[in-house]
Image (cartoon, rainbow, N blue to C red):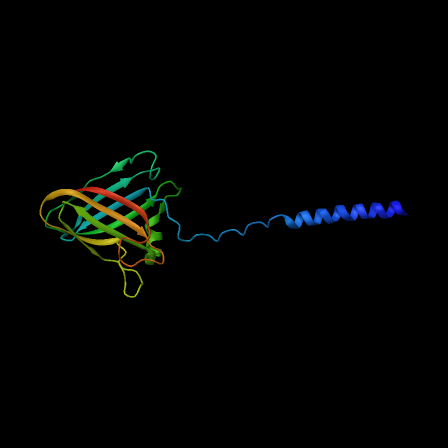
Length: 190
């Protein structure tokens, strides 16, 4: 009888230790919620210009870096060539060519327009930029997928195109948020 009690006590002790050891293990971590505002890979930035005086005069400038930032250099890096003393509408097309089918990132920027803004500035070249598309903030803030470019005197330089991702901090300025894309195109005004 004493042996049965000892065996039962040993079995109970082992069972207790097993249960206790299972209870001490850390719980599986709670998975993080999906980040709906994560930065997209942008491999291609194309500027599509339409001359306001002649809608048949289309001009394109493309920056294409198939593996994204770092790694290999761009495979295409066009110069923006516009007429001096002219006005153009510029539409921006953003692509991620690393995906199959190719992902049109511009659609995501348009969908999340309250979180994105393009910024433009030139070095040397004489161009004035005006936004044509706005988000739904009050007051509305610019997006920049569609802009008007007014060129002035002939010259050359660079135009800096920056897309900022600014969820919950967009205020119309360059400072807040993260940079989704940044390209400095050579520009010639003829």
